[in-house]
Image (cartoon, rainbow, N blue to C red; front, side, top):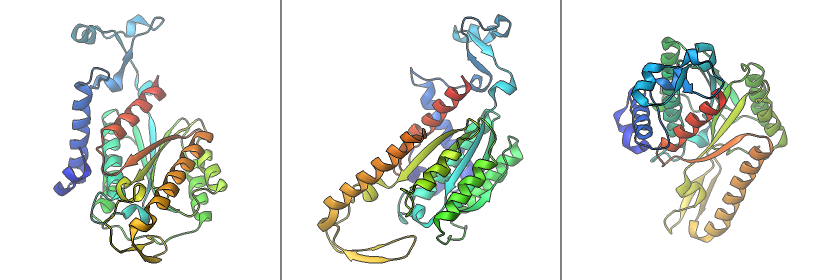
Length: 304
């Protein structure tokens, strides 16, 4: 399911449910994955587990052995960090990276809600904009969706660019207040002037303090930001953070641009690898299935 297929319908909570239902249906139809209400309450039986916890009713339905898990074993804490800077609002007339990330965040929250996991939302534009508490009750999830809806409906104020010190302070604050053994998910396009700054990456690594796991979804509009596909005529390009403008014919610099863009992506990927951060490039024009599958598999590994 693509962003362009659902955004016309408006209501963010309804859209998130629709995306999640489509994802779960896809897992049901896959020979390699399964998803049901048992996802939150059961795990596959392995020799040595207490046989008193085997769910025999589930065995009768599935012909597979599962053991019941107690709530303290299954609950996950997940904090989502959402980049709401100006560059995330690109492209204005298409699959905007911010809207894609907002709906993806809402869908992940719906999955967390189904599993009675706790979630917390932090939004930032280098400087911390919002930092919500981490809870698992229904009222909290409604509040998180309300926060997200401001960005979905373009009612949130356009942020002003900040300095690298603000970004480092933001990451350090979030890391210092994170619960142990949490899953921290970051949605960002990495398009700021400090993406290769070692202090920023060390601040990102600090998020792993307390045995936390980090997943970085690197969100781009691949057609234009990576492949530089524009018509062969003069275009005006505007820096979304500094508002600097440039008029040029894309065809004249496409080869050099693509080379630099690929090198930048490789730098981000290598930095994530060196700091033990899970890295996933995401195209805002793609469907949500692979992104949710990545989250689903990461959750299972953390709970195994």
